[in-house]
Length: 493
Image 1 (tube, helix red, strand yellow):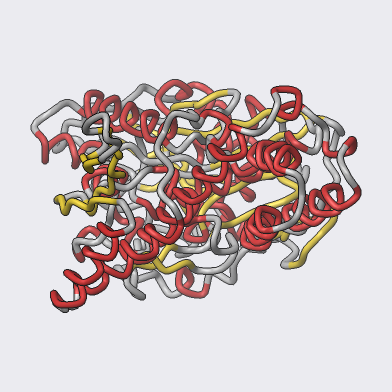
Image 2: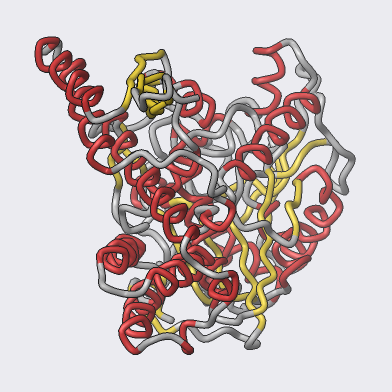
C-alpha cells in the first residue's frame, strides 16, 4: 500500500511502526454549527483510508477528536489565538449555554456520520473531557524550556525550539503567518509564529467554559488538544494523522512542535495525509456566501447521503473537487443505477456467493479484483477503483461473480450495497437518463422539450412527478380488467 506523505511531499510505501497495528488520528469537527459538505469530504477520506487498512488486515486504532472548546474565530483571519471562542459565540447567537451548543452540534455530527456510513472510530474524544491531559502536556513543554507567559496566556516559544536544533513548519512554509496573517500582530509575542498553549480568562468577560490551571483560570489553546488526546490514546509516536488541507499550514505544524518538545524530539507522526478543499460552483465555500451546504440541505433536495459519498469518490482526495447540484444529481443517478445492479444480481445469486472469496473465482474475476485493490492501494485512487467497478458490471462475468465482487468492493467503498433490499423498484438506466435530460430542459426553461421527454417516459411505462425535492419516478403496473384479457395502466406505489 502506498500513501502520499505531506511531511516528505512524496508517495511512500506504508510501513506501520508496530505492524499489524496502525494508529490513526483524524481531526474532527468544531461543534459550533452544522458540519458542511466540505468538512464531510475530509471525514469520508478517513472512512476510505480506515476501510482500506482494515481490508488489508491491519488492526486499526482509529481516534477522532471533537473540538468543543478553544477554537477561536481568529483562525479565519490568520491568528488562531485571537477573538472569541466559536462555541461561546454560538451560545450567544442561539441564546443557549456553551455546553448545550457543543452537545447539540456534536449529536448532529454523530447522526450525519451514521447517515454516511462512515467507519466508526475506536473513540470520539472531546477536548473538554481531557483538560487535565492538556494541562499536563503544557507542563512538560514548560519544563523543557519552550514556553513563556504574556498578558493573555502561555505561549510556545518557536525561536527557543529552533535554537535547540529542532525544525519547525516542515508541513508548510508558513509565509503568511510570518507576516502576521491578515490581522495586526500581537506585539507581546516573541515571534509571530508563536502560539497559545493556555489562554487566560479575561477579568472583564465571564466565560462559560474555563478551568483552574497552574498558570491561572482559563482554557486550552486550540492546538494542544490534538497532541494531548492523540498521545493518550495512540502513544508518543503513531502511524497516520489525517485532516483537511487547511490544517497543514498552522494547526498540524504546531501539533508536531509541541508534541516533540514534550516527548524529547521523538518523531510524532510517521505519515501525514491531507484532503483537498471542496469547491462550490467553481469557487470557495463560505457561510457568508450562502453556499456552506450541509447534510440537511442535501436531504431537503431529496438526495440520498450515499450519493454525496459516491460523489466524493469521483475525485482523488488530494485534488480539489467542484460541487454543483447538477453534479450531485449525476452522482445520485449513478448510485441509483448501482443499487439497481445489486437488486438484479441479488435475484439470481445464491447465498454462498455473498461470502465467496475472490481467490476462489474465475481468473477474469480475480484480475478485476486485483485491478480494484491495486487502484485503492495506490494512494487511495477511488476514481480509478470506481471505473473498475463499472467495467466489471459491463463484463461477461457470471452474475454470481459480479454480485460477490460488488459486495467485496463495498467493504472499501462503504456504500451500504449489502443492505439494499431486493423488493425495491428498479428504474432502468434509459429512464434515469431521460429523467436527467428532462430536468436539464426544465432548468433551461425549454418546456417544449421537457413535455416531449415526459411523454416519452410515459410511453415507456413510467410516470414522473415533479416535487420540491426533485422528480419522483414510478412504474405503471399492468392490471387485468376482465376475462377478455384487456389491461389498463395504473400508477405503481
